[in-house]
Amino acid sequence: MPGIARSLLWLSFFAAILAAWWVMFSMAQMMGVDWIGRPQGMMQMGEMSSMGGSMNGQMQSGMDGEMSMMRMDTFGTLFPMWAIMMAAMMLPTMVPTLRSYEDLMTSANGTRAGWVGVLLGYFVVWVAFAALITMAQLGLMATGAIDAMGISTTIWFAAILLIIVGAFQFTRTKEICHGVCHSPMNYFLGHWRTGFPGGIRMGLGLGAFCVGCCWGFMALGFVGGVMSLLWMGLATVFMVIEKLPQVGQYVTRPMGVLLILAGVGLAGYGIVG
Image (tube, rainbow, N blue to C red; front, top):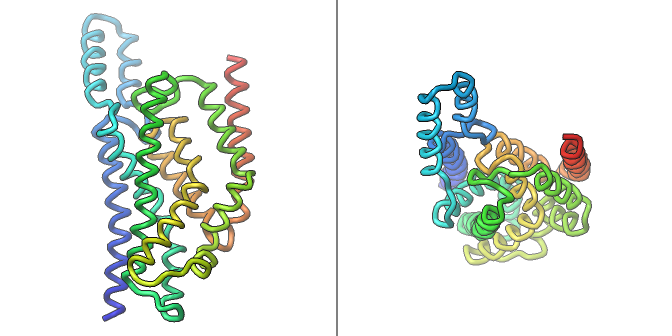
């Protein structure tokens, strides 16, 4: 019976991840964006513009109107998107943490309810972060730094964001937060609580450290567009690798170097251009 409960919980966990990715894919399709987060109609409009004529103007006007209807520019529309995105991107990174909890279930009196509590507490923190980054997106849209699709409107904003996130990879804050995410067993041993309430409490703590570790990769969505499935996939893969016990400590700073170089290169392109 315990084995069945464990299997059902893990199957439900992975089903939730798949469902979140399916929702994000469906939203991208409904919003008419491609896999890199750009409106699919942009290329079609560019091709039609070479033909000229009033028909092109009418079709472009219709597509502009359609895009304006699909823009997500209110808290009520953006927040659910970010919350689902957090589930799609961050739940996969929880696998080592949940496995660590399972290792302590026998020796430290852990329970399946506590396992669920850890997961729930962790996700609550990321939903709270989804609310914060939603407000950040609305603020950036109001200032014109990003457009209605969450895409940077200037090379300089994108370059600065890349450099800031890259530099953060070398900070003491990143080191501390990554240390907890990279070795959840040590966190459990130092903050162990039993039962469902205890699991929630530990999950909240782990989620807070995880936000401190990974917030920058969420912010990088504003470089190319928050609906870019390519960015979501690459960021998720990197964050999973960063938390693996065997290799996580070897990828953090190299990624910082790559991000800084990308930012500097983008800034240089802006100067030359």
